[in-house]
Image 1 (cartoon, helix red, strand yellow):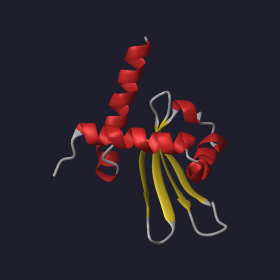
Image 2 (image 1 turned 180 degrees about the vertical axis):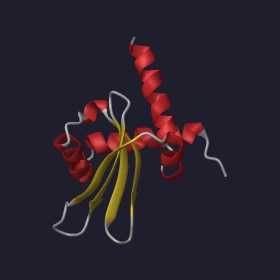
Image 3 (image 1 turned 30 degrees about the vertical axis):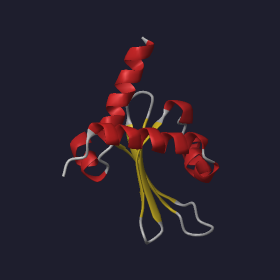
Length: 114
């Protein structure tokens, strides 16, 4: 079953709002900042947690780069397991369906401000 673009765009908007503004997501915001990303210019286009205390996410930077990360969410651990720039949108979209919606949102926002 294919998820509608509108639902995926809403997911990106909700994830990004939490990442930017929600105190419960301050650790994700701190991670982005520690890697030189500006949270107010970065979208969070994918996110999930596993039962084995790992968190995965994908940032879309202001210059259009996709960065996938993995980190431990175990108590007293914020260990970053990986931080990788990704190019294969199709493959990444398999695991994070909202990636393409995030790219479309970013392009639309840029066009509106130009």
